[in-house]
Length: 83
Figure 1 (tube, rainbow, N blue to C red):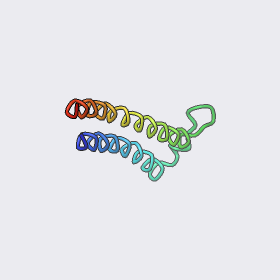
Figure 2: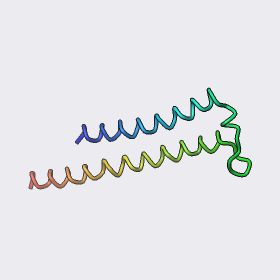
Figure 3: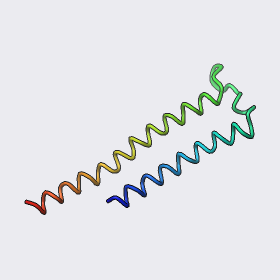
Figure 4: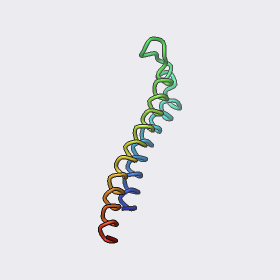
């Protein structure tokens, strides 16, 4: 179970890292893109930053949900072995 949970965590971390690196590289190599205002005067840097926060929250919930399934199954198996 721990290896599966670790694998899930690493996959989610890699996905988030790709999003974050996109943010960093856009800021470093294309700051004029980050200054653009796609939604009513709010620049892309702010939107991307909030997107990163939301993505981290969603991934944390997803990780908890995916790992919780295994924990519930393990508890059932433990009770069956002990009882």
